[in-house]
Length: 267
Image 1 (tube, one colour):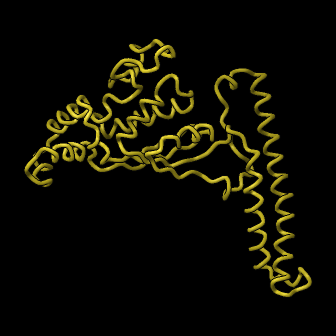
Image 2: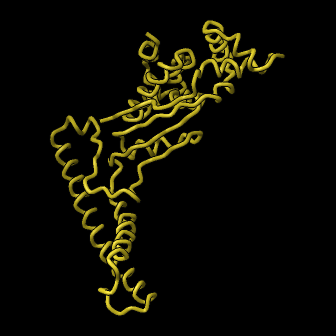
């Protein structure tokens, strides 16, 4: 199940953006600017910034989301947004003895397709477990031989239990590194994402659009709704590109501009 949480953001994000913008044209210092910025003045300044396309001040604030229940297919698309920071659950260090996976809606609603899909996922799990076992056994044998040679020992039984556990852990880690190659794009993952507001708005332009894949579009909309709760003026016009202007998709446009503008309008 998709879970999106805005876990941190710059305090008073809208006031910070307004102060940064005002500083560019003000003879006074930051303290005085902040002191004179009330909610009404902040909103007015932010609306002007967004209307005039003066977006550099909004880079001063950032938003951090924790996201779970998404596929590797989604995160491959997500990390293409390069002006961001990402920390993702590693398949290299985490042994997935029972991996979770995301079923696309069109497969979920087709009984025959869903059966094939689930059977495929089950086979992958079995094959992954088998590969880990086989590769771990081979690597452990190699590590034991190297250790015996290095310590000038003859019998594996001479290896202390503590050292054997260390060698086995290394062998399993190496096995997991290679066995993970069988996992599909459907494999579920977890990620923490931090973007500044300017990049976040660009992300919403691209990924809230109907041409984005269903999964990342669903996630992007939830992220936008959560960002609006803490910075409603800043993200007032955020969403697909067509929310604020003509659709940039040309002949590939969905043709539903008015419906989309209603969907993303602040209620």
